[in-house]
Image 1 (cartoon, rainbow, N blue to C red):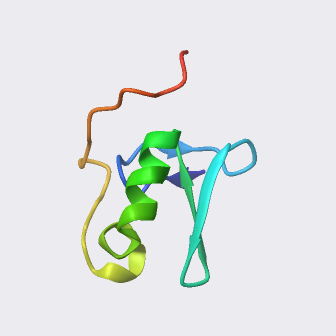
Image 2 (cartoon, rainbow, N blue to C red):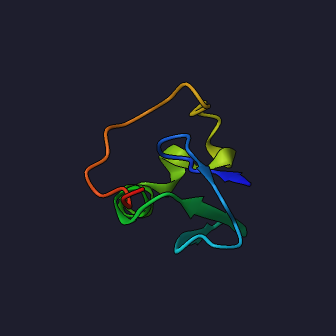
Length: 67
């Protein structure tokens, strides 16, 4: 399992539909909205940024898959 760097949700790396690569690291996302947010400012959400976006860090989502 991976953690969505934008919202902190667990994401299955095998079945993830949304992913981005930044500085040689692959990031997995729960939905298209988180991927777009990351892609606009990857340095803000990447593990190399020094910014802590741990499990307690959440954003509201409008486009999570149902279920």
